[in-house]
Image 1 (tube, one colour):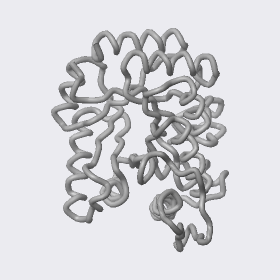
Image 2 (cartoon, rainbow, N blue to C red):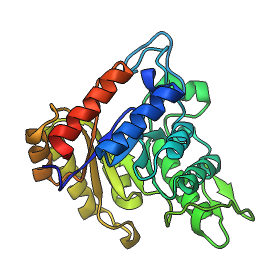
Image 3 (cartoon, rainbow, N blue to C red):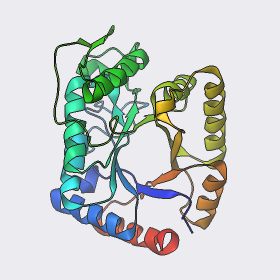
Length: 284
């Protein structure tokens, strides 16, 4: 039923899955069920007390994405490993490049580099990074990371990152590095998708909102030049719709390439039941 659209599983590193046995059990089950990818969530810190627009209470458990994916890489063999997303301007780009290259090597080239620019002021303040320039900062970080991953003589001279005379090995197995999937539902996010990303990620979107974002991406493609090396834009969506054949049909008609499902599970057993249901109804 779902031959034309890949199915991923979101939030593999949170809450009841922030435990090595639970994480391994659910990751292996998803791979055996035919899921195409597993995706992490991220907030390095959360506001305490919780204040809008924070999506989670301060005691929510989230494993670091690269650490969680490295662990999953050790217990799986084929399923892709996505960061959904990493808040890029909060990270040191060369340290993150080393981490992602390491996971890509250890997973034999299975990493998807999902990124976003963030939106929680208290989180940025605690980490010591200004929110105001998070968009252009993220663009520079992507460019700098691709240089350290690929160039014979890596270097970058920007406003937010500058280096030369250094190299970092091993480099990612994937060339020119793990594909960048840009998250966001705004004109700047669409622009960054067109100019700097292999793909785009829309989170918790119903078909109507997905269609509106795809129209925005199409408009951005008319305005901004897309490097040939990035190829066609791969569309990933976490759907706001009940999983089933109608869901597949609706998003498939829109041209979505991948659906990353949020199970709503609160226990390992609920996660396994959800995976089995998706296998039986959409993947078999």
